[in-house]
Image (cartoon, rainbow, N blue to C red; front, top):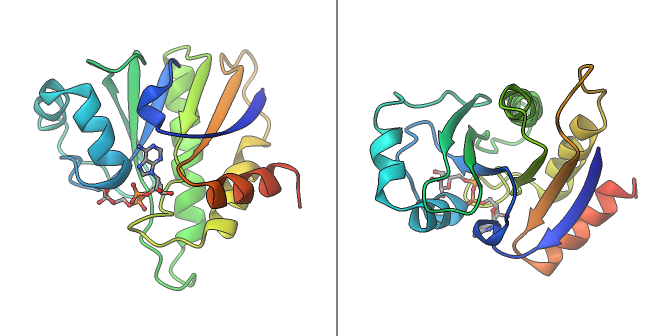
Length: 168
Ligand code: APR
């Protein structure tokens, strides 16, 4: 599995799956959630309204609608509460559950935003290390995933992700 760091708007990527950093209501919001709903169009919200939300750490699949990507996987990251409330395990679960769901639809390419690193205020360096360590875990035999793109929306985040990927 190749891992790349890329800086820009995740909705511009032509990959099999883009990942949304959603909230438990799964009815849109600001940040990357807002951008994905904006780009996917109103059919995404209508579809999400039938999903009944998503618990923190879990992931749900929708079509990509007007996006270039065929699918969106919505995952709900933890709100940072200081690090003693199981946030690291919940964030790792977001990446693990999203990868497993992507494999269930034979996705080959997937792009992740920096889950929880915006409104949910997760410290970027810690979050990036968790993302990279989950991506380095062995995948099941026959996993479809060939390429993972870690998307940064700022140059600061891009260097944090690059450092985590390089093990710095
Ligand atoms: N493309 C890629 N990354 C983006 C984009 C975009 N278009 N917009 C924002 N980001 C980045 C942010 O800069 C941040 O690094 O995504 C990361 C995650 O930030 P948020 O989108 O705020 O997500 P999160 O911290 O997980 O908080 C989720 O915010 O938007 C609401 O509905 C969402 O309630 C949920 C909460």
